[in-house]
Amino acid sequence: MTKLSSRAYCASMSQLEFTTIILAAGQGTRMKSPLPKVLHPVAGYPMIQRVVNCAKEAGATEVRAVVGYSEKLVRQVLEPLGVGCYKQEKQLGTADAVKSADLESIEGMVLIINGDHPLLEPGHIKRIFEDFKADQADVSVVTSVVKDPGRLGRIVRHMGDLKAIVEVADASAETLKINEVNTGIYVAHAEVLDALLPLIDNHNAQGEFYLTDIIPRAVEEGYTISAIKASPRVAFGVNTQKQLARATKSIFKRKIGELMDEGVVVIDPANTYVEDFVSVGPGTVLYPGTYLRGATQIGSYCVVEPNCSITDSIIGDGVQVRAGSYFEKAEVHKGAIVGPYARLRPEAVIGEEAQIGNFVEVKKATFGKKAKAGHLTYIGDADIGEGTNIGCGTITCNYAVDKKKYRTQIGKNAFIGSDTQFIAPVTIGDNAVIGSGSTITKDVPEGALAVARGKQVIKENYVKTVKSDEENSKDEANSSEKSDTSSDRPTQ
Ligand code: UD1
Ligand code: MG
Image (cartoon, rainbow, N blue to C red; front, side, top):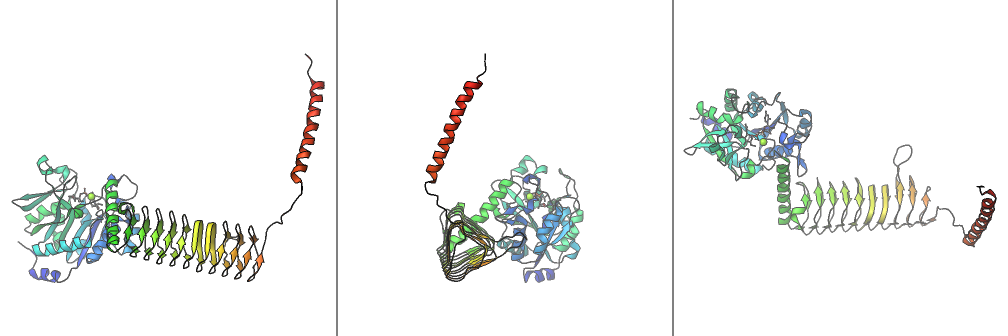
């Protein structure tokens, strides 16, 4: 028997609108980690953030989370996402957790999910609601048939009809053989939850208020219940570090699959890691060990060689990123070559066809078109003009004793000899030449040569003189030693 009027169903069927309650107050003791379980990252994002985004994408008009363990830290992640956090004072069980979410202030359909199900996708939720509406149920539990039911609650049916959900701690050997499990996801009308939750007690092996008991209570109270079957992916919850690693691998695999479908060449998909919001153009080759993170965008026909880490960076078409390079918030324009072993720090802008070589670090600096810094160089707080060549071992000394940073400006087509230091602030004109080993403290005009190093001194026959001096003093020492020993020999 259905207790709700059919008008209520019609209203909620027209458009998918619902409130989500995410349960996230538990510690996750099986993770054996000081970090609350739901904040463990899965492919770059805290697992609960994935659950929140999934619910929103599926159509959740409001997302609430029940928090408790390490509440402050969990709120820090959830509140910026627009999630309302509700405190569960003591972790008395999943039914008590739902009660903490101020049910009276919710209207319409409610989706209850666990914060530890990072593989959940918006499509799964949409399908769950389709079934919920088709079943015309008051409360439904989402189940799944899995190979290894482990510690998940077992779905007990009688003549095919859902009867109860039994936790492992309360299950008989016979019940434990059931491989249809509770995914921990439920859909219900808010008023049904409100009516049934106070009826749940804690008379079970763990002394907890189990949300699973909502099913028998609903039957007793004459509500319509249903079990909605979903894929095993929906049932996958993270309770241990091994499951966390499996979740991460699965999400990276999905993203790499999408990229390959769009024409990205991935040499070794199992060893290439690309986060959700990264884009890569067709024809680009990703070598193993590549880690692309955050809002990184990579153009077409690029090559990213092994073991590069690129975060929040924009890379144009036809760029070669050579092995072992590390970029954060950098911009590399088309046709540039960077690395091997280059480090681009925030606000590094590498111009078209520019070249940044091995062990070069660039920070808050621009390189013009075809400018080069081939080896062992630090360029920070600087502007390097088009076509300028920076020699090996060049350093912009940008940090002064007043703890402020100063800029080095170098014009176009300048030639900077190896082992030059620029004591900023300093400006070098177009086409200027700096002699190797210079310490440049003053501006250099356009087209000038600047040499700022100690003058070379030649001392003819220096080695010979030194040697003969040494020999003379040795001879003197020997002869005095002999006379000393003869005269000072102790008498016996
Ligand atoms: C729960 C279900 C089980 C189901 C499984 C699916 C119950 C009694 N059992 O078991 O049938 O197969 O999920 O993953 O519901 N939480 C709170 N407050 C509490 C207790 C838990 O907020 O007092 C939160 C946890 O942070 C977690 C979620 O509820 O996000 C589930 O709790 P967990 O302890 O992982 O339950 P399971 O043992 O996995
Ligand atoms: Mg769990």
